Length: 115
Length: 116
Image (cartoon, rainbow over all chains, first blue to last red; front, side, top):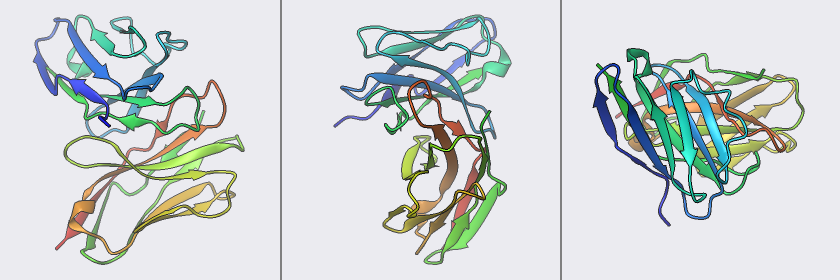
């Protein structure tokens, strides 16, 4: 079946603008995760959803970052008033259920460049 | 907090040869899972292999195998008969077992180059 998809593939924006990144998980996967990969770095966990709820938002870097998930499917990560340090690849993953035994499957990511 | 360390930023291997990528981790927990993910230039993270900490037997997937040393907190990946398509960034990752342990902790990666 189809894997995790993300859009846009690449996004270039100006400092101070808002951006929305979209993630469409694998059908039937109830858990959804957002990670950030900065240049030369590993992946940094941002937030996860179980269904439509996000029990732990502590990974979000600042209050300019927010995420929502509706209908237990598509999720949107919003970054307000973007800064240059927000430039990174944002990866989304999904898993069948909300437990560590379920493998996380990743999308191709959105490369965000803030000028 | 758990940490994952990959001490080899870059590795190279001749095609058809064998290469081993190193990973160490730090945790106080006894139940957890370890992973190797591959990230080619397409950016998509692809699961290569997974190891449950409670299993003594090392996981294998075709040409990929791991050397899991729980006491030493070491989890290396061996790629046999290296192929050009194996060229990628490889990330080692850790996740605790149980509910409420939802996030993967990643190392900083090893860039693997295959020499034809």
